[in-house]
Amino acid sequence: MTAVLRPVVGLVTIGQSPRTDVVPEMAAVMGPGVEVREAGALDGLSRAAIAALAPTGDDEILVTRLADGTPVFVGKQKIVGHVEARIAALERGGAGLTALLCTGAFPPLGATRPLIQPQPVLLGTLRGLRWSGRLGVLTPSVPHVPQTEARWRRDGFDPVVFPLSPYEEEDAAALARAAGALREAGAGLVVMDCMGFRRKTRNELRALTGVPVLLANLLVARVIAELTGV
Image 1 (tube, rainbow, N blue to C red):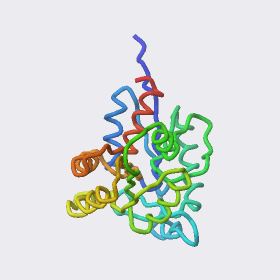
Image 2 (cartoon, rainbow, N blue to C red):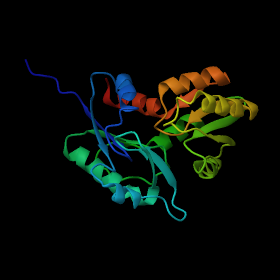
Image 3 (cartoon, rainbow, N blue to C red):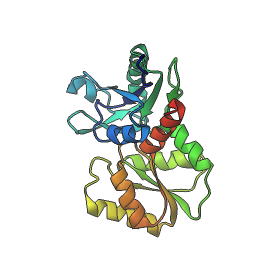
C-alpha cells in the first residue's frame, strides 16, 4: 500500500524557531494531516548580529522572540531579506505552502509557491465584518501604539489601540487594564494584532470585554487548513 504524503506547510517567524508558544496551537487547528516545518529569520545569528537588526530611524518596529523566550525588537526593513531567505529554504525543502508569523504590514514577499501574509488576511476578514462600536486593537508594546494606530487608520478603520505584550500575558493585572481600556473606549470587536498572542489570552479577553476577539495566528491556521484541504 502506498503511503499518503501529508502536505508540508512552512511557518516563518521573524524571530527564532521553534515557536513553541504559538505553533502547537496553530498545528492543532491545522490537524494531523499537515506536516509543519518551522524556520526563523534570526536562526543561527549571534546576539551581536541580532542587535544590528534593531529598528532605527523611521523603520517599522516589530517584536518577536528568541528560542529561549527572550523578546527582541527588530526593524521591518532590516528583516525582510532574512525572511525571504527562510521562505526560499522551506520551499527548497518541500514546503508547498508557507505562512509568515508576523502581522506587520510587509510588502509582497518573494515566494515561488503560495504564501500567506497575515496582515492582509486580518484586513480582509475585518472588512467583511460589521459590528457595533469601534475596532479595538491590542499591539505588543507602547512603542507600537502610534504606528499601529496609523496603519489601521490608513486602512479605513477608527481604532482604539492599547499595548499588551504577548510575552507577558500571564500578568493578569495588565490584561485587566487592557480589557478595561477597551471597554471604556467603546470597542465592539477586538483584534489581537500580533502572532505571539495565544488562545488562552483571547478567551480571557473575550470574557473581560464581552465582545468578539480575533486571534491572528488561529485565523491564519484556519486559512491553511482550508488551502491544504485537510
